[in-house]
Image (cartoon, rainbow, N blue to C red):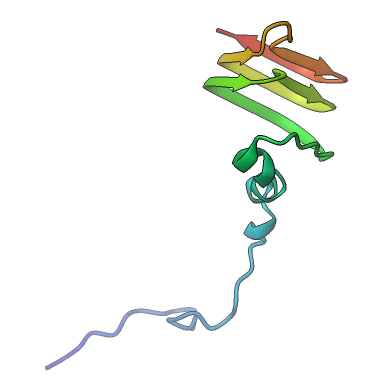
Length: 104
């Protein structure tokens, strides 16, 4: 029986021959999950100082004791975002932010 060989004009290996590290363990979502675990699991306050750019939140409803605070963010887009803070607290605070877009 004739078995046709796969064409491989560039001579690559046909299996993983080199370990790959794309740095996904340090991607922002992984860093946030790791650093904010106490807040997610126990509701304890967490403060992070990370450079943030181009934040987009869409179709989100958030209940937060103190609302939501954005500091030093370059580029924020909020579309159909509802934030329900405890009484007396402002829902969203922007400090030192640029390029803010809010829409319903």
